[in-house]
Length: 115
Length: 115
Image 1 (cartoon, chains in turn brown, green):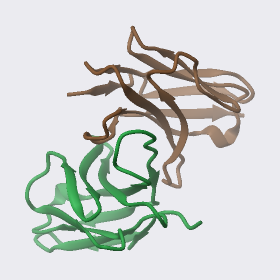
Image 2 (cartoon, each protein chain N blue to C red):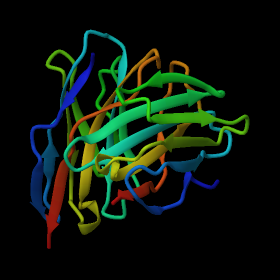
Image 3 (tube, each protein chain N blue to C red):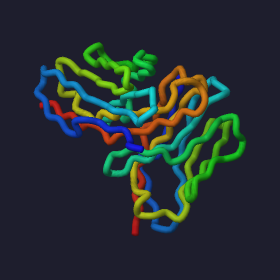
Image 4 (spheres, one colour):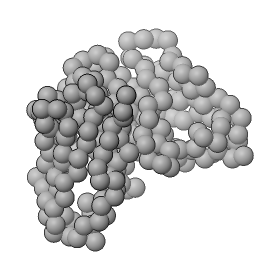
């Protein structure tokens, strides 16, 4: 079974600085998707960024980018120019390409942004 | 387009009672997944429905059940409530359950408190 590990329960960053959240996963599959979800204090979970395993190029979405290392099974999220609104729980998630298994989430990292 | 809606948003029940939670997916989405979120266990997958069929089921006791209707709306039911069932129950919908693009859109959740 696939597992997702987020080793940093909490992190903090100064406003306008850059922070990197770590995620590792374990799978025997070669085709899959990886996601980062954000859950602000209001509790609405939203998708931040998605990476297809077959793509070597790292995904980027505005200030959010990932460092996808397939061989190392690592999928970190970098937030540049951090803003107060970035404060939230961040979840890393895995989904097999076949779609036959559910989304697997890590335990999450709580990010605080300091003004 | 309206997002995923969940009703009710908050619920207080007594141990031993049963509860039904409802989820309306984004229009056109045919797949609905349910998750239980607690501080200790994080996000745990409950079940996934696609076109009224349960496609995946998490490791939860039989007291947890669900169903999906022809209009893709879904309900989950918990019978004989226990104190440990207190949690945020999240519903997520996606366009398709087949392989390929698979992005889940989450609802705001139902906060269930069992006393």
